[in-house]
Image (cartoon, rainbow, N blue to C red; front, side, top):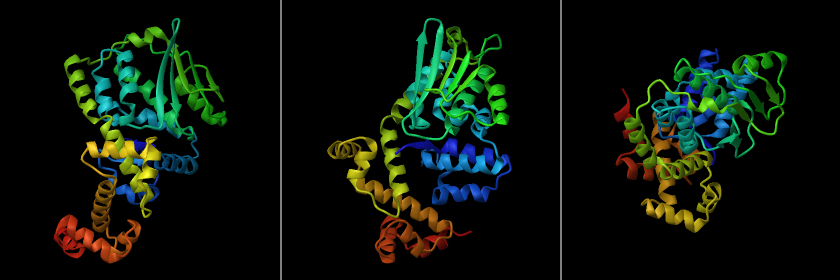
Length: 329
């Protein structure tokens, strides 16, 4: 299951609202998952990101919307990765952290940095076919980070940008050229930023080795455990009302069934328990959002309404009706 963290999706929804799109329409594209926008640890399926971007593209007539979104992002929008990058010594260190911790933000792509003589090629390789929006966002946000976070005497000019997307409209081409300020090759074999190797040595404004190591130790606690669990939670949530099998989950993670089961056992979990936890969280949120018990039962794949009521009693030691009454203001 390919995902994007909630901080990126939340930032995207807020950005698109500022562009004039209605909050209700954007939330409708996320369906029940909209209630997780403020959950830091939640992972949205990449399809949600793609749906929001495509909707904005068609409504605003801006196929370069990914560039604009990327320019609006701050390092803090990347979560822990952003904080680590900010206190790095130079751009090379920040990029090394991005390669290692990228999956905390999204797992749909891989970052590669290649050095050939005095040239560097920073590439992003998607693990699954997606539209151009995400690579546009990434490249423009990386460039924005470099321009804002490096010391003023840094030379940050790109030599060339290659993009796999087809050549856009003339108006959008001008936006791409203004963003990157260098030759751009559309329809290329890879998505890459090409620049002089000296750029990697550009010092950042606020290097802090002690804080950097502290944050990296926290990141180490989050991966790979959090990645697998978050992938599983996102996969389960996207399958509702169908209840997925452990075999299907293992296939999504690229693991054998026994390997997944051993992994979950080591975390004192089971696939059945993960499903139960997802149902518990969704049931509570949907109830507080005004869904009826019957609607929740159907959406979460319960065989009948009474089965949800029994589960709810086990989870919260009360009935859905009493729970709702206690939480109404």
